[in-house]
Structures are given as C-alpha cells and as structure tokens.
Length: 472
Image 1 (cartoon, rainbow, N blue to C red):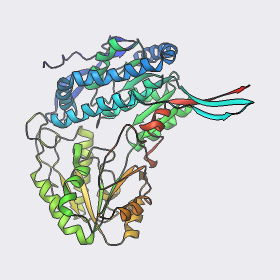
Image 2 (tube, one colour):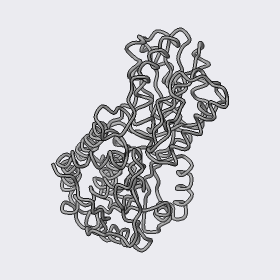
Image 3 (cartoon, rainbow, N blue to C red):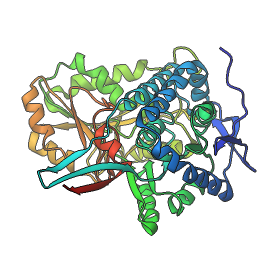
Image 4 (cartoon, rainbow, N blue to C red):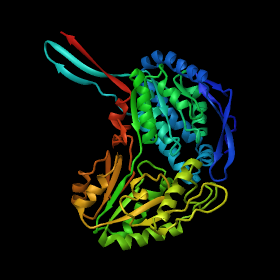
C-alpha cells in the first residue's frame, strides 16, 4: 500500500484546517523532521469548540444504534489503513513497526468493543404510586488530551466512550506524536456529522487553553501526575468534570515458589515493553531472596539479547525513548544511580550519536530511598529488589504516592490473592501484567488519578445522572 501523504491538517467542524503556524514532528530514532503539524491558535480552538457545541444537540438526539455504527467505523478506518498508520506511527513515536501494528489493532478492537456496550438505566422504584428511573445523559463537549506513549490506543479510549454516550469531542494529541491522530480525524470526516469529532494539534499552550475553555464541559486527560494537578486546578474554574489517568510506580512482587524460567520473559516485558514508557509498566521488581539470583540472571540474559534500534529496521525489539526531554530525564536517573555507586546487571551506559537510544538497564538491589526506586523512570530502567518477608514487601510496595497498578507472581494463587487484596492500587494482576480490556474499569488510587476509563464505569464517566420520577 502507498504511504499517507504528508499533508497534515486539523479537523474542525468537519473541514481540513492547516493552521496559521506549524510545529516540527521529529523521528526520535534519527532526530530528523518527519513532518510539520498544525500549531492550533486560540481562535482555531474557539472554532473547534464552537463546532462541537453546535453539533451536540443533534448528536445527542441521534439514536444510539447510529452512534454505535459511527464508533464501529473508527475500527474499520484504522484496520483498512493499518499499514500506512503503522509506518507513520513508527516514524513519529519510535516503536518498531510490529509493535506499532499491535497498538493500532488494539485501538480498532477497542472501538469495535465499545460500540457494543450498553448505557444502563437504573429503576429505583416501581410501585403502584410511582416509577423512578435514573438514566445517563451526555455531558456536552468533551476535551480529550492524549499522551505520546500510546497516541492511538489512548486516544480511542476517549473518542469511543465520548461519542457513544452522545457527547461531541475536541481531541488533542501530544505535540510529539500528533500525526496518526490527525490522519484519523481526516479519514473520519465523511463518516460523522460536522463538528462531532474535532482534532486539533499544537504546542504546550494548547492543553491549558482547553482545560480553561468555558465551552468545554469535561476533560479526559492522560499524562503525568504533575500535569494532572494543573488540569484539575484549571478545570475547577467552571466545575468541568475530569477524568485523570496519571502516573504510576508499579510494583511487581515475585514469591519464592515461581518457576523462574516461566516468569522471566513476561516479567521482563512487563517492565520494558514500549521502552518502559507505559504508565502500568513494572517499575519496581521485588523478588523473594530465594528466587532473586536465578531470576536476575534470566532477566540479564534477556536484556543482553534484546536489540534496541530504529523501529523501521527489521529485527529491532525496542526503539528509542520518544522525545529528548524524557531521554534526558532517564539519562539523569542512570547517572544518579552511577553516582550512588549502585551495581548494574545490564545497561547503564548511554551511547553517543543520533537518536534517543538508551539500553535496557537493570539495577541490582538498590536501596528503597534511591531515585531509581522512588521515582517513576518511564524509560528502560528497572531496579531489582530483594525481600524475604511478605509483610515487609507489601508495606514497601504501598509506600508510594502512586497507586495505579501492580502484580503478584506465585505458584500459589491463594497466596498471591491474599497479597493482591492488600495493595493500594486500582488494578492488580496475578501471574501476568498489563492485561487491560474494554470491559473492565481502569484507574488509579492516590495520586495516580481520578475516575476510571473503560468498562461500564468508564463509559458512564462521559455522562451525568438524571433521575426522572413519575407519579402514577
């Protein structure tokens, strides 16, 4: 198939809008410009919000079966253009083409699955005197703010739920990875009424404009905890609804009875998939002392055979860190571990040259107060930490401002469940990690977020409750 053309425009009111200015989009493997994306102005954002607000009454009144068909069309558009999307994705995000394809297929699957979900009506009372029902009504105009680590999948999480429940949408991809979402907006223009789905791109000023905009009724944001706090403060001015999916410092707890050969590979990729740039990546790996040496050796062997390189080259397992700012943060974390005199089992040396490449790095049993343990790396760095007491490791895992997810690994499912129930996180997996579905709610405890995405609860985040009571 031929590649997408490199004419990237915003979608505002169903029309292409090139914008009065542009921002360069870099390939993180080469640091060369892939394309120029529109840099949305305040006036263009106003136009997008106005288009969404004008389209809202009609979209709200559209029968849900038609809204289902429109959301399902997203899946069809992604699937039909899969190869073109994948190549473009790799050039702007850095992930190898095969892994980019997996995300795109996941996004299509998500849209198709959400299209089938039901919006429940709760009967509160049905007596000879009265019938009372609580139904769910759309909020209005939703502003979606999407991060650079999963630019299509996390975008579809927002798009599908918002549109199915009857809202209209203004969505903003990250300035580091705007191209695939801009193309999705372009390809969906024939399939949605004008103004229902608007895509705007721009620099750092665009997000704050959206969170403060009086014409936007809800913000769904995925990103860092620090930025999430600013989103919440900005949204308070007109009591915008917010869903915030924020950072994590997820702990995996490996008990001494595991089959090391069986769990090493899934544990490795739970930490290093997408170069560790995953909010639910394993970021602290606690290993029982009796299994520590064997598992550390297995993980080191995997790290030494993984190929890091340009995602467009065959045989590449991991691409670059996505952007220079994150690259510098991860380098600083490694440098701090070196300055502390910590032991590296793999990696630790960042190569010179073009591209934001950092090798898979394993740190051997650092102290709990070291930065490599206490901070979310959001890159290919993982501390392996010994423990010999279950009560102690539960306390250590919970000793974090974050509470997004975690995992427990054991041959004894009951023992693992007993630990899982005591972890202060929104999701806990047992003998697996990062299994997220369209049907199960996903969200964080503590400073990892507010509200949930996915499942019925996630769909209802795009609605307000309305109770209607009828006196018979």
